[in-house]
Amino acid sequence: MPEGPSIVILKEQVAAFTGKKILAVSGNTKVDKDGLPGQKVVAFKSWGKHFLICLPKLTIRIHFLLFGSYSINEQTKPNPRLHLQFANGDLYFYACSVRILTEPVDEIYDWSADVMNETWSPAKAREKLKALPEMLVCDALLNQDIFAGVGNIIKNEVLFRIRVHPESQVGALPPRKLTEMINEARIYSFDFLKWKKAFELRKHWLAHTKSICPRDHIPFIKVKHLGKTKRRAFYCGACQLLYTLPAKPVPAARRLPDKRVTVTRASKRGSSAAPAR
Image 1: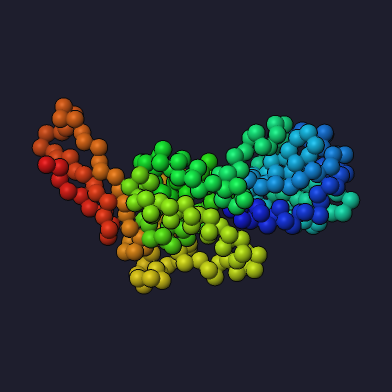
Image 2: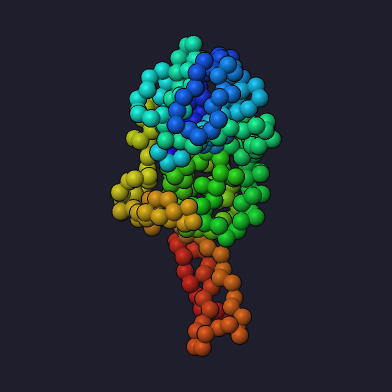
């Protein structure tokens, strides 16, 4: 799935079509294409993983999902979902979701949630995170309402950078560690952008798809489906610390006979459990 920085690159690559008239439209998308020819592109915008083609009275929204892609001036795959023809070139989109938005995009999107946007607000991200204390950080970083544009690569790399276990809970993170996660989500996204433009993104990966931790030189733990988002995770069981909230006490009437409630405390070296007294 293309992440936010990749959509920013696409926006830059198609800048030559800004102000140009759409001459013809084709593709196997089910949206109504009849009203698109003859309209001029007002602007290209991005929000997180959404690519927006803004026309005078509507916007074409492209979401690349897991396997979507695009090409410019040359059809590189069969059966494009959408093909836009201009006098100075062509845009092709494949295996993606296409929607027509009739409301102004400023009323639909919170630009301050987009980690690549100049109006990104870490304060708003913090406020949203504090309202979700039990959420796993691996899910929080992929929550597009909080970190629009962050995908699985950025998630794995950010958590490795800040030495946080992906199953840590948001509410258990020390304040400085929470700040670090918020800031690194944006910092790494711009590193991603720089490296991808230089065609060297993969060589900078420290955790994503890797086998050995470069800090502790032990095998990474690999999980195929982690958290509610069920995305791949790569992390070190030694240097990425697990922060968990205390377990909620179980009322006496609901306790099973001869069972003790355990309380999990955040640990500086991982998770630990101590019997309730």
